Amino acid sequence: MTGRDVLTSAARYWKSSPHEAFHGTDCPMDKTIETLENRVEALEREVEQLKAAQSSPAPKANWIDDIYGIFADDPGFVEMVELGAQYRERDRAKARQTAKRKNRARPRLEPSVRTRA
Image 1 (tube, rainbow, N blue to C red):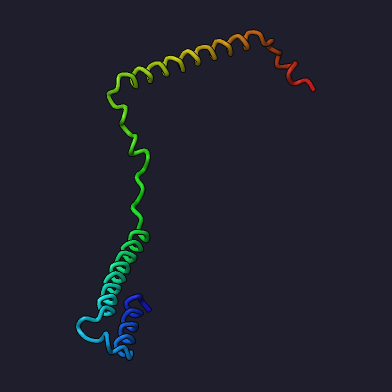
Image 2: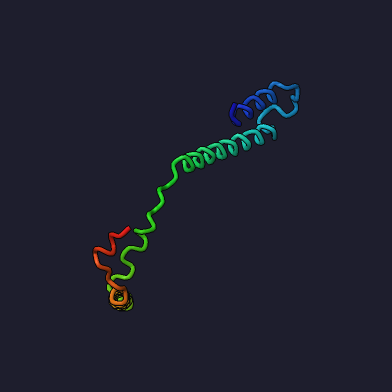
């Protein structure tokens, strides 16, 4: 039973009630019921709109799409990428040198010694 049905049944009860003094064109209760009916209709429409909006939420944007390309043609970003590449290359060269030193320092065993049990 909707709010409108409740108000309609209340209005029917009021009009059929023994309050003859208020029946007629200037009945204040008729205006009140009409106002309440209008308000309930407006509320029901709004509830339906809210339910429809809630049942189909808008898809969220992918965060990558929001930030993709924000550094395009930015000289600071280009410099940062170049400095990062230089740092990694220095680190690789350092690692190669360290590996060479370790290989020189390690004594080589003869194949016959390695297979000994």
